[in-house]
Length: 341
Image (cartoon, rainbow, N blue to C red; front, side, top):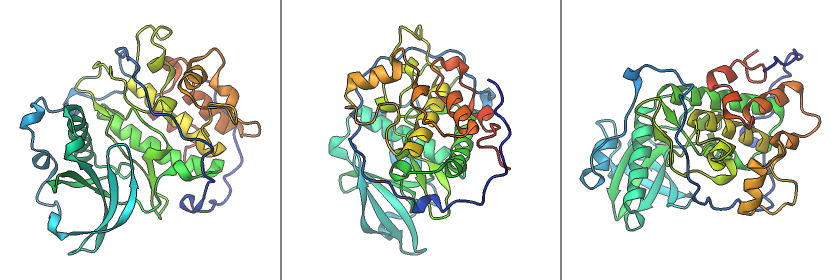
């Protein structure tokens, strides 16, 4: 990929990202449908075998989630008080809670046990393993887990700015946001963790403009670099073409490159203020989304006129239809659009 031209010195920092608002979306995105996934090629992520973090092989019926998640620093559940409701998702609700002894605020994610089949419980187990093993300033921290009152409750770092799904950002803000996202992804990829559902709703921000990657319910820890990512998880609107069109990709799927595609779609969405791979006003039904992502026309046609060469170059790198042409996260960090000045 050719290097973009030099640009002028960055202007003074724009208003805090967390203060930017966006009008309500014109349409909801569809619920993802099952799409069979092929095995991946050799991963571009380079890490020694000693750094791999394999998932537990224990049967789910014998797992104690609290034993996996908790240690001597885990706050006692009796010391937590719920303050108010923050939001909900497909699997449960999230509440703001305060730890009484320290007055520290947390987010408490609750998932009813009555709704948990083996697959759901496995996803919870996976998310807890990832969050407890991940210690990075751009990955949301997990502080504990409780099974109480008919619920699985996950105690998470509270990000007071919410998600970036409700933000319209300028290029300077996008560069600041995605440098942090790429640093978090670099950390995860080096540990053979792919997110597989990277989108604005899973990128959280706080009042200090720190951005962190969240929601690892569909992530996978690869016990070896060659392990396949062969399940149809994630949100279809943010899936990479090779994950959907297995014929064109010849049965090849690289989870690391899939995360890079998610970076590109998310960055463009934050710039445009709407899902970017459909024309304005186009109904986001399943077939239309599949064609927009996998059809003959390049998704690069949706990049608005007037973007700087640096931003366009960054988006073009992330949104390559051919997964082998997408640079790894470590290379994107040196791209002039996000590189520090």
